[in-house]
Length: 280
Image: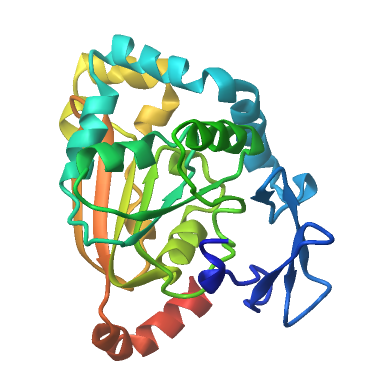
């Protein structure tokens, strides 16, 4: 696998190796930790491990996977926006270095990964996709095959990832975080697997303060409660800096960008980080 160097057991952080006979990934520290590979997609969770809150959304995404993109287009008509163009605009604002490794969380139908390629055609990157929905991952897998791209995909919890510390240069999450049962845990985990000075970019439904005060804003929230969700700034862990909040798509979606602290800054904040981990 292209990402074998960063694969770690999500249970104990032991190194993972492929058992081709059993078609699974096995933890080298604890052999009882084994994870099946289903149709080429390693799976790190069973249905019974998904919380009831998350299971509701997983079931919905599994059911809607094949026609998800068509459903998203209804947002365009309803809100009077072009979400794809708006996402591309945001992605163009990311500074990419050649051969950087990018993790796309809640990757869905991989619109963000293809969006990064369109926004930065001159830069070669290595992509990894993670999703709770196996239905979405199968759609993603088919699209990469059709595009003749090799992109590792993982069926995994958002707050228990099968990667080592500091594995990615950039992490993106466009859509999904509003529905997570434990947003603080997810953000802590994403920052854990982000390299020092790496970039985290999170976007989802959420009206700007200005739009919330208007009749249009009130009607949008009445139609879909997700647009009433506040940006999860308060849930960002203390290991980040340069936090920026803005809105896109006529102020109907928030966009949070930030950086992980540098190695030196992380050393300086070690007591604070330990306190946050224990008390948070």
